[in-house]
Length: 368
Image (tube, rainbow, N blue to C red; front, side, top):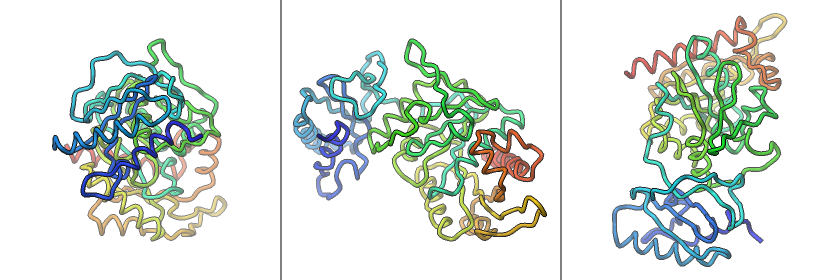
């Protein structure tokens, strides 16, 4: 039998917008879906058209009631204030059975989370495998080394690598009596990752409303201490997580990570366009794996080419923040939970991260 999550996804894909072939998930109309016993609350983001809202609401209610175990369907609009009910702890699994007791239905006001940080820096990429998480972790540590109070949020819910890279692979955060989460601490940072909340081998196949709900919950229920910088490691690509965070946060700016190959740069430029479309300034581009540095003789070899990210940044009128070489110590540090910015500060790669961090600060200051 399909999971509850799969049944809801199937229901939403069977409902299309008027005069459109796009279903509700494709059109990103469903922003929240919370099950509490026999009742489900569905939040829709629809134009202020009373007739359209009434038609779609009726279709959602009729279709969702056909899901086994669902008796009551409460359809709300995203621009309506949430009900004044006390929050409840959500279930650990987004695909929990109908009698699970998730958090009370509520949707936060737009751009309210993490406002106790002076700057929120999102680290993204157009595709996976370019070292985005490596840059995010070492950038956060370097900002701390420069004297700033920094937190790190691993928002890559599909492939969280921060527990490994920060040496917290088996660590679980403390959960308070009020169900709030106490961030983990390492290398002077407060940090949180979905990888520290679920089993390492568990596959996360969440989409649309579930992605929104998980990120919403981690931001809302984590006791973030505030400070100078919050660095967010985004999933690769331009999907649900990126759009959700741009809605829930006032992101100061984005750092785009790419390798020098044209195939990676094409996707990086798509990421730039996505951030610009959601009004998130692009602080600049980082070229990772820029050249291999021989640990014996120091000779550089441009395995994946070199300098193309700087060229692409110039062509798209965005700053170029710097290059990170291919170095064995950088890879080993990530695998062993000992990031190079924390354990080998005098290395050329750590210095490259320091230069990038300084440029990020300068770009933010220039925005002010």
